[in-house]
Length: 268
Image (cartoon, rainbow, N blue to C red; front, side, top):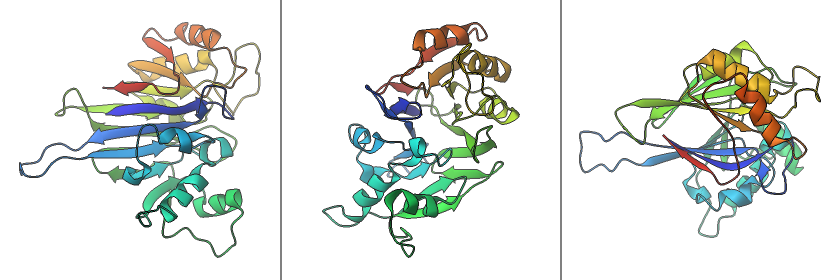
């Protein structure tokens, strides 16, 4: 499995990064038929402002297999409009539709962002599928599981299981928190994860509101409770201090902790 940080700025795009968007890729296991070349599957987790342009640096959008939205706030979903235009008006002919998994009405949300008429369904570009906590989707070699997040609107924590790039006979687990405060769902989603990408938009001592975001400290607590192997911190807003956030997480989690930056790749 490979994870590429397309965008990691919290709540808005930032000076050095688009808003939330993460490209996850996994190779099929080689089958018994040697003439069959195992292909790589590509999924986008969230698609915030600025992500469409940055994605072009890492993947031809024509090769994208699916989009999975943790929730439908604009900072995680706004660039769905750019993808729709790209797929419909691709110069060599319209691209085939891909599934888009959302915890709410993805069609209505897309229509609202783009201000399209009520009869626009995007059915030639997207197959919108509404998912709920407990649902499981199999997409190529990836098993995608959804867990209830603790946020201001319906939201999911997402767990992906797929073959390891380093040892294709072994499965690895990648968990993405989406936007959430501490809750059972995020701990369950991250249990035993090889790589745990966790939001940490709030700062200890500065942000006291609960039920919205985690701090570095709470992210570290969740990673520790879940028994994750490596903690990646993301969704830091432009005014959030990455050094303090990482230091706070390290107070509660003994494993490796890193604040991600756009363009980083993790292969495991």
